[in-house]
Length: 119
Ligand code: SF4
Image 1: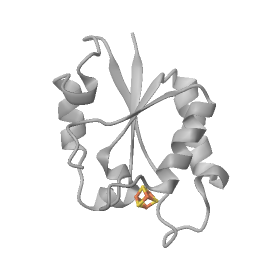
Image 2: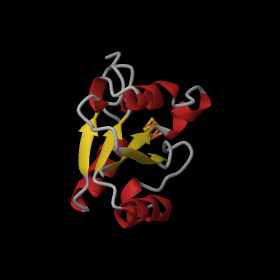
Image 3: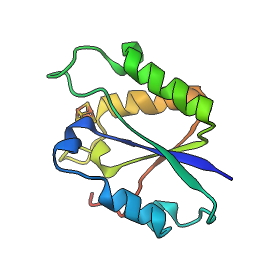
Image 4: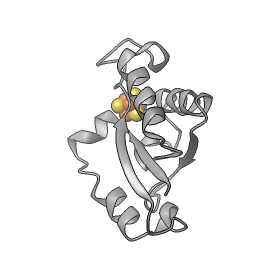
């Protein structure tokens, strides 16, 4: 059994209930299409927020470190990153990029995409 998780933008919480990500996983569509039935979406984490909320970069953020420790402890093998990682110009938010690098450093695979992408 494989355990996976999602990473999304904290700011997107204001308007996003994660419905499309969860639906894509439950229906095994888009970036989840190759997962077998017994795959578990076991965690959903966000970034630590924009600079306007916190000056602390993800690498120095205790909460982000704690979340990643928990993913490792839970045996999460892959993290899918939502389309909310992209700004309106289609560029990835540097804080999301930093968290992806932190995940990969802990040997967690990062896949950019959950449901169909708008950009
Ligand atoms: S740092 Fe980036 S991913 Fe995080 S809330 Fe801000 S815009 Fe969203």
